[in-house]
Structures are given as C-alpha cells and as structure tokens.
Image 1 (cartoon, rainbow, N blue to C red):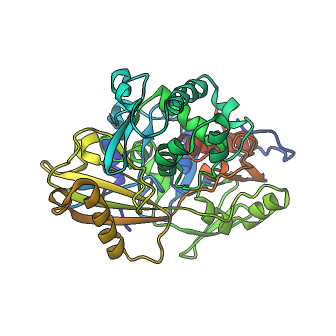
Image 2: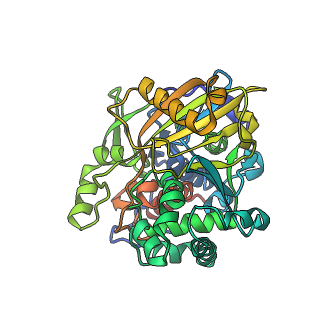
Length: 462
C-alpha cells in the first residue's frame, strides 16, 4: 500500500522548521570519508540520521518504500487520515520528549480510561488519580472486584516510582504470570487487562515480557495517551524535515549488505568507509545480516522468535458517533473477533472531513484464512450487537490494513538495554527489536547506533 498522506520532501522541509564497549578497535576516518549508510527510514533510522546530522556527520539514508516512517505511517483516503494500524502515542516517553516538538505535533489526548463491553453493556474503567469522581461508580461494576481496582492503582504507583533502566533490567516473567503474581483476579484480567494489553502489544496470550507492561503502565501514569493531529505519520515527517534532502533516498530497497557496501534491488552498489547502520524491521534485518542473528541464537539470545505479532485494522466512515467521549472501547465479553475500537474523530477531529466520523476497529492476529470482505461483514455484525443497527447500518468501509509484522516478539528472556548496536566492524543494528517495542525504544536504539558509529569512526567534526 502506498501512502498518499506523505507530502513531497521539499514541502516537508518548508513546513517544519551510550552503547557498551567492544574489542573492535576504533578507526579514524579521513576528511574525505564517504557518507555513512543508514538502511531503513523508520523511526530508528530517522533517529540515527537526526543524531548524525546534528553532529554534521555525512550520511545517506536508503528507504525501500515511497516514504518514511516504517510502521508509523498515515495515509490520506477520501479526506480521512488513516494510520497504518492502531497506534497510541504516549507523551511521557523521555526520548520522544527529547527528540520531538510536541507543540508542533499538536497532540490530542484520549480520556484516561476505557469503556469495557461486557454482558451487553458498557462499563467505565477510569484513572482514579485523574478522574476520581468518574471512578466511584466503577467500584460496583462487574469488571473485577474492589481489591482488583485497588491493585490497578497500586500497580500504577509502583511503576511510576521506578526509573526506565530499573524497569528494563528488572526480573521478568510473562505479563500474564506477572498479573497473577500481583494478585489480579481472572475477572479483571479477562474482561479488562487482556484486551487492553493485547491492543498495545498485539499479544492476546499476554506472553510479552513483564518489563514492557511496567514500562507502559509507568508511561500511562505520567503522561497522556494521544494522537498527533496530523496522524501518527507526522512524527516521521517532523524528523525528516530536519534532515538534508540530499541525504535521503526513497524507493531504494537494499537487497544485500557486504563489507563496507550495500547493493540495491536495481543492482546499484554503494560503498562507504564510514559504517553501515541497519535500521530495518526485524524480519528484513534477519535477511540482510543473517550471520548476526544466527550468532545471537548460538549465544542463547533468540532475536527472531517464532511467533509473530500481527494485527488487522479496519476503518469505517460514519455520520455520527454513538459515544461522544475520546475513549478507547475494549471487548471484555470474551466473544467475537473485535479486540478494541474507538471513534477516532472524538480524539482528533482532524482525522476526518467536517461532519464525518472515523471509526477504527482492531483485531489481534493475521486472519490469513479470512478475506477482507468476510472480516468487514463479521466486524459490522459484531458491532451492530454493541451499538444497534440504527448506528452501524450507515457505516461505510474505508480500508483494511493487515499488519503481519506489527511488533517484535518480546517474550522472556529479553535484553532490551544490554544489547550492543555494534555487531561487526563498521556494522551497527537498531530498531525496536534491538531494544524494546515502543516508539521510545526505536528512537533510543537509533541514537545509540549513531553514537557507536561516531565514536568508532572518529567522524565528529571539530
């Protein structure tokens, strides 16, 4: 699918104004060193490019598709902004705060809580620290017990008190085992926590590392979950606008990486004596540098686990929203295929033409045996049971996104902060699969890869 949302690079530029040591010896580049090569223009690659550019280090960024952003892109379709899959931006992430201009992103916040559909009704779960009055009625709803709801608050406080490094290096288990060890009941896990966390990690089994759960809970406690007014793709646009146009190439897929060189699908070979940063998503990285991944497996660190985090996101146009709040709606019934949904324009009206409502529906898994038409029909039938045919009868399907690789598999054991970006002399790896599966993890990973390259190659200009 090609993005229609990304404006030309020239227009973007007018619109938008520490890794561990290694035995590899540093090499000092001459004044005429060729640019470093960055393979992949997702958030990690853009973060690496931003860091190199800030140090006046020459680079060439090669992106396979027609625009930048990787999995965090937005398309323009019939006047609607359609993010490629379900995304929520967490405003408290420190690397995002350091690198991005939040005012320019014009973040539109969600209500801090959820509506849970269960027993043919919607039940509110609110953040007791931000909406204490809204939380009082939820004490008596069937989504978990009173001790469960107290545990949510205590878990939130506990996570908020920890540093990111301490969270990412803490003892770990699966999220499910962690929730049970804390003392959450099956009721609140199945009706609220499972669909809520599955929507974040695309993992209905809750087999993701408990470290990621703690990190996200901390972020939700300290900031807003939000959407940029211009779509999730505007994050990448903002970074691209800071980079020299001459250093960026789209439609340039790399098919192989050798010693100090890359080869493109066109047959063009590009050499460098300044280092190569591989910033593509995990499956592609394994194809380009298989020896790196095999060496990690041999060392007992499986960096490409067998299961795949997949999702399907369906968008609909509507004339009205039956719920007026900017709130996430979870399926706590244990039935059907919808995991979560929301009325996007309740959060950010800019996502749709005036007078129209944008509906986003997320499924967990690939659903490879089901056609888009069948999924659309099943989703509409299911949501008609939630809202009534007088609401869903006029919904018009806009587009279905099938994201086969939505996130790396981060089941325990993980090593998010101990992984060196330097994997060979002059070769570096970054991405959320090399750190932790959040926007912040990708940005941090890109910066660390650039720092390692600069340090090794002596490319900082005086």
